[in-house]
Image (cartoon, helix red, strand yellow):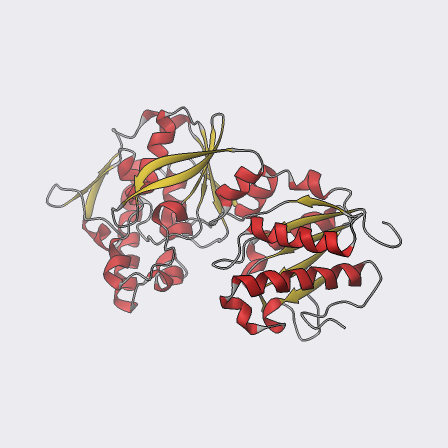
Length: 389
């Protein structure tokens, strides 16, 4: 490392959800580095952990943009952006059946479906894709992925001989399942399930119990969704010869879509690890002097697979210090230890109004980066979580 500055700094933030994209954060950070010391080289590395922003991260790494027609969680048509590289593709579940800015009613929570995800998978299979990554964060659905399975040819049948209504609440009506019409290309598909939770699909910490309320379910609807998932799990697991899968870690991701993916032979992986591999993060970080990462909210959940923590751990393995700029920090303890980071600056401690003001957030990011660079090249003291000295 230079005595009076850095040779190279890696800029590896995740998005500030709803405020600033990861790509924009990289631009803001790069401008601040250039202002601080024009001799410092930067390596841009906007990251993702399996939620929204995953396709953008792949495109930044040189993948090609594509679009597939499908339907959202309630059947409205939409065009779904995908990232392609030869026979490989990446799809964000949030772009198909996500919440977005919508606040669903309990009825909408009960009927949200992943059918559109199956439409996208089917279109990609028929276009030659044989290696697919599903980024499972941000879904509005809690249907156990049964909508996706139905779109791919799995037949769920109720007592009256008809398919059940869309959504998780109606799954209590399923009496039998047939897989004979499952699209044949599914058998040869290499399917990666990128998720940032280890929740099982069923049980006291299942997908309905843990995430149903944030998707619009009230207590009664959460109970109906839970009952539907618990009912359909053994029926589908018998059809796929996969008993007990519903209690596997990660099966509860995206309202049970992780579980459905496992039935199809999919392999769950930490979303952050998937995308750090995809982006070539290890090569980018190796030999750097400093890594600057960040996310909108740093908390205990961040330690369970979120991108900034994965970045810090990867950097530590190569002896590179990592600092973070975050919207808010609920991880740093009273002792001032900033988790796996050498330092953290929380923007809401500089100005709480940033939570609803992207322009203010941008200015504060620049100030935070200036402070961190000064502190960690020996020109100042650690920032102490938004209180530079």
